[in-house]
Length: 193
Image (cartoon, rainbow, N blue to C red; front, side):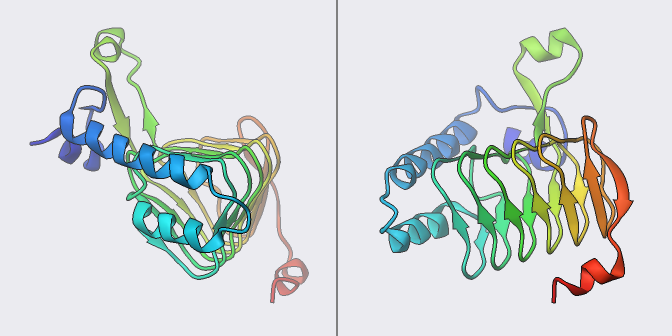
């Protein structure tokens, strides 16, 4: 089994010394250099690079440079996704972002983590668990989303939060660790139409 196959199955894998994974990282890095050098008036070029880099990109999506990711092909964007400056996605596993998602500056999504066991960590092993973000989600500035998290539909994540567990639909969640502080009421849901 290859290191890439191990990672796709949520097993520990060597992401640092594997030629296939290093080549994929290099390819994504080169595309990101071009992307991050584009001018604001070069929206067509940005979209073209994102189509080559990402696994899926819906209609009318925008990611403002600078943008960083590990591989790109594990990232899937729905329709009308907006990510502001300094969006970082460590996509060792799938990152699926729904429709009408707004991501503030300095948001990071991490699928990758390292074992607590120092012997395994010294070998450069890591794991990757998928992250899913539903539709109609607003993620505040400086939020970190950790491996394996699912954020439901119609959710607001407060600025500076560290999301280390699943967040259910129709929730306002904040803090470190991020916790649901209240349910979004029906009247607020209707405002989204």
